[in-house]
Amino acid sequence: MTDWLLKSEPQTYSIHDLERDGTTVWDGVRNYQARNFLRQMQPGDRVFFYHSNITTPAIVGLARVIRSNFADPTQFDPNSAYFDPKATPEAPRWNAVEVEFVKIFSQPLSLSRLKAQFEATELLLVRPGNRLSVMPVAEKVAREILKNSE
DNA sequence: GCCAACGTTGGC
DNA sequence: GCCAACGTTGGC
Image (cartoon, rainbow, N blue to C red):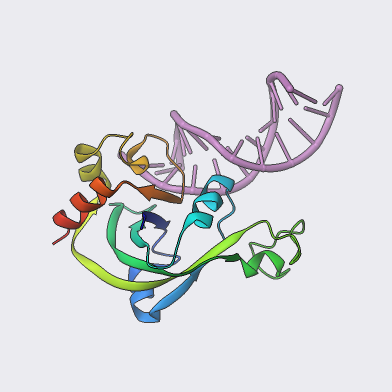
């Protein structure tokens, strides 16, 4: 089992939205490195949910992968903002996963705290200028995060 | 709102 | 294949 981190702008889709919905399809990823990580996700994998682009960016909760490695339907939809004219159902370019809500942390872990706690080599999130929206989390780091979130 | 850090695009 | 221009992400 692998641990992952997914970024989301809470004004677009927050952990509270996921709690309300129960499950959601994680679509719209249009970066190849992020897509390649999406393809490695397996049902049962743990997902840390990160709120970006706000006053205090932070890891705010936990989700779990329930379905993985399928074509992102938005790439075929001309009305979607994520439409990709070069993608076809026979040769999809982009992948999605489906995740389910697990919990909201009683103690969110702010980016500033994570930067103080982890090196960029341990957690890609704290690397300066990092823009990756899907990334793996090392098991040791995942354990620390879980411990500090309660 | 600013700007650093990228990723992508397209001319050559 | 190089690289300048441009667009986007996301912290601050």
